[in-house]
Image (cartoon, rainbow, N blue to C red; front, top):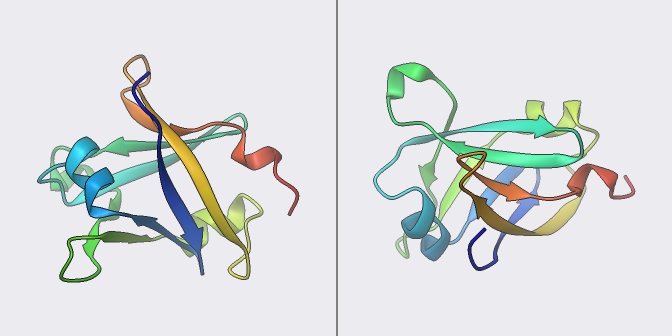
Length: 106
């Protein structure tokens, strides 16, 4: 795995700083969010027709936001919760991984 970075979850959305987006998802418009046991996997979507959640431009600095209240609600993370999640790239999973986030108290 590579050097750690972080993403945040608040109000049912996943927030990625420009640096995280540029490093792991450059030029992409969508990601897939998956729960694998207690981990959150953020997978790049290479073809828009494949689906996934849109990586919307959030501001002029290039930060991105993924609106996914349905996904987070299904995982027990309410819109009133705010989380800062350390993430690392896993070549084995081909995903940005936040380990054990679903073990957090809700």
